[in-house]
Length: 355
Picture 1 (cartoon, rainbow, N blue to C red):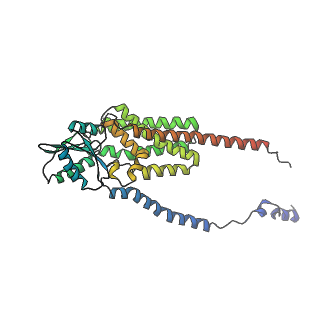
Picture 2 (picture 1 turned 30 degrees about the vertical axis):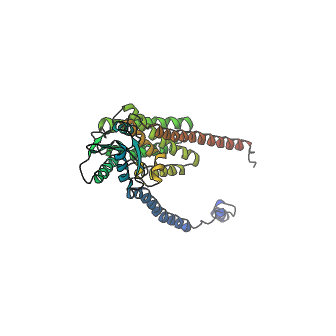
Picture 3 (picture 1 turned 90 degrees about the horizontal axis):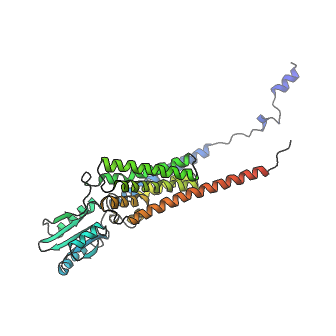
């Protein structure tokens, strides 16, 4: 080979790919922004978590807690006056006699009732509605009676194997996580439309059956109709999963984080599962009942211990969450399909490049 050809072979042409490459841009500034974002974001998330979980727990106290009083008008007025000393603590409901007060407790209209009798005050409670509230009422009535022993009747007791309601309270977080996981997996696997809905419904139904078997059959923390419990647990899971998948279908992967934040960081601590919605600061208790975890706990209590009393409200809330979430899944799938079809049509109309 001649020297001239060797020279041409070893020297890059001005038009070769090597000469057209632009110098690499420094990435130091980009990495710096990422570091700053992490440094700022982590404390913000910690502050939000402490606010959502610690603040309601630190401010637990009765606020317009529904409480019944029954007995002679004169005696009832005296009891009501004593209860009124706790300003804003109780919402008093009047009943003619003990039987009416019992009915109100079983209908979940009130958490308990003070019945004035000739032998002294008698307290009716429902530990199944909230063991903490039942204990609080007993302490309050005993204090008003000057420390004397007050007869107490647990009209609707909690499960014998779970008298403090610990197992039921602990079920909120796993069900929420199961719903988040179902919505995230459906999104990350790329399932759309009817396939996504079938996966969400199937997973939620299976979660409901497994949870009912564990909490009801094995732990004995739930009573009542087993299939109704499984349905309530499955519906609560579906409400969370559909919400997460629906937001992801409309917003993309960030929708998973938004859905998880709403149901985990707000729904879980605002649910009032360990206490009662009326024991949380305003408007935390109300907001919690609008979110799937709080509505799910209320529905499960009604079905398990109160023969379905006051179940329609939380059931409707969960149904709305599930329906809106599944509707968003269908809408997001339709929008993506339309976008893909538009892109394909534009590519077909584009003329082929000429040499």
